[in-house]
Length: 299
Ligand code: SF4
Image (cartoon, rainbow, N blue to C red; front, side, top):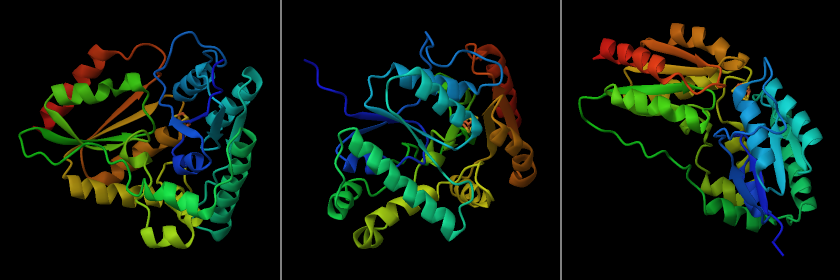
């Protein structure tokens, strides 16, 4: 007899992996490929390809549970599709868009507790403060991407935007083959989507508060106001000495599409805006031409 799955699948950065692990379950952040042979989310006009790919890839996993968040309307739709179209228990985590008020922070904390009760129903156990603190101590720092400063002739580039499917990471290869270097991956599936390092002292005093605070402060275009996104970017762009920005969003992503104009005005660096419908294989030849031209201009 096969063991029942202990895996909890999610993709949104506001789902704390340590909270799932402290319940004795296995967190798995799923970055969709996407896999062929869609099941729950058919290809329909207006559905974000990332959200759709996540729905189909999550449904195809043999998971104990799926966690979706209210990060955007598209993800709410994904929750409905999964709840109706799979037998896997699915949880909708409310992530408040506002983040500066005590009420919003408290609501996120309460949502984590509600998520905890869902995990217990799936066979997890409610962790004591010590167990949670121990799990968090094992993961104090964030998983910094393996990007280190290089002093060569390549042009340091930042990739900014929402999440990228695994297939769309071809962007990185094209930038590098055109003479660029990824000095900053500021996409949701890159460095920007990672929580800050835990504070060891606060972690000991109240681990759940520290966990909630570290995750709730991840900067994103969907936050209101989204000033944190710009202060985070300012800091990172300065530290990495970036000379150009490649901005990517999926066609139906309102939050990131709206951000392109603002970023262009604000950043003071050349910006190449790319969008993709994410449905067909990325048009590599066209992308290569545009990225080459951009890098040539920067050299
Ligand atoms: S890419 Fe945009 S629309 Fe799609 S799931 Fe992410 S935030 Fe939502």
